[in-house]
Length: 293
Image 1: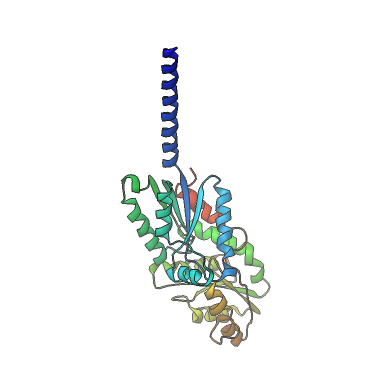
Image 2: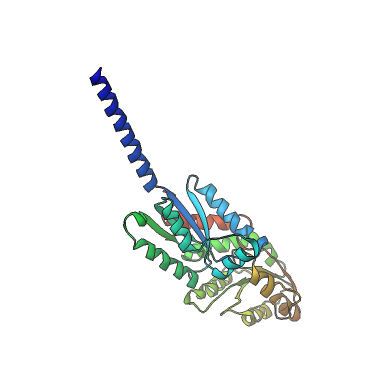
């Protein structure tokens, strides 16, 4: 009887030890995806980002999906006006690590690998330098929308599907990107070159940097379209889209400027993230970075 009790006790201890080891192993292999956008303070525009988040959750069942904004100004404005707290990438990664998520793919939701992406990559590099129990077993960063040549081709295919008909029969579509003085802003000129190669009546312009509104006007003058549709080349139709692009009361907005040139101009207040298509491109980048494996 005594031997039976000892044997049962040993079996119980073995089972408990196995369960503890299994739990520890499970904790170490918990996987997460952190989606990182610039952000928007426009509540009605936030649905575009939320749509991408939901699509990623469906694409990676069982993986913890979180969201962070890189713009501290937007994060603080949302907290002040709505009482909604959205993490920065640093805070989101710290939370995930503290919760035992040891394998993380940080997926940029930016358009180009510009300054915001560079800073995100640097933050991830800093976390990778942390070893031991306060570090990650794996931490990778997925590329933004326009990185490889294939990304450009896929993005143009998406734009043709969504807006191609608006560029037919005397129409032209003008895309407004953010732009910057970062060298990666050359991506917008590359998009224009590919539009031209495919014979599309698409024009690319940016709010900051080149190609600006004057360049857009020059292209339209040579194209002579009967009507023009303005579309934000951004994940969300936020402040720039609503004010710099589509504000009919602002004489310096793009819609006012182009109407002043004599074009029948309308604006579409939908970001690239609205509807289907864009999320799949970001999901491809998550997989390329090793997420969901």
